[in-house]
Length: 241
Image (cartoon, rainbow, N blue to C red; front, side):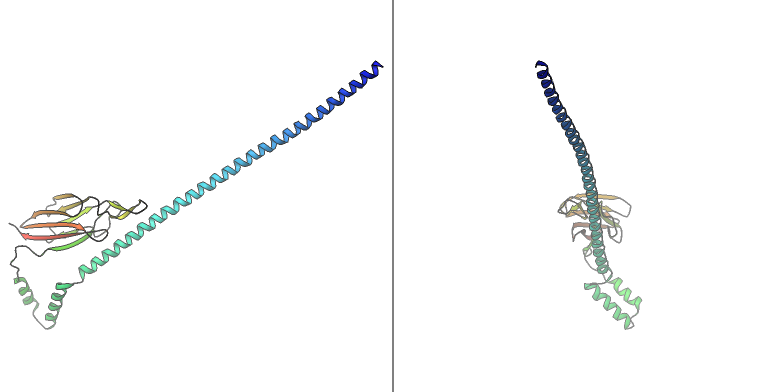
């Protein structure tokens, strides 16, 4: 009897341990599957993260390229606007207007009527104004900036004896980017060069004034802000002394 009871207990323990072994095996398999799934998931997340970062980098590069192109187009448009203003000034300069247009028309008519050109030139040459100073003359030019250094950036007075030019601080748009034209609210540099090459520089916020002597002439110059990108220079040339 005791031997049968012992055998029964041993078989019971074997069944228990068999079940425990099977459960452990199942848990091991499930753990392996879970670990493998975790590793696969981690690799997929890393791959997805890498793709997202690459896509973000591409989008950022495309955005930067578009912004640079927009800025280039804006600068091109500004340059074209300045050139259009230069053509307008050239047209006004080369086509007589006002009193000069009337005198030009009168001279053309007299020549057509057969008046001797030399006699007409003599009469005009002998005509004088009793004033000691010539009538003030106003000219304008595009004030250069570090962004724009094109044409029409200087004017001359006293038969070319005095050259006026300078430099301004670029204006900024609402986004903070620099424009091609100068900011009239910021200090500017105005340079005056005489016939001997001597340069006088005046700094400050417009308007600015400067007097100088060139040969037998005294030149009084006033520089003020004009239309966008332009400064206007009024010069009065007087006899000296």
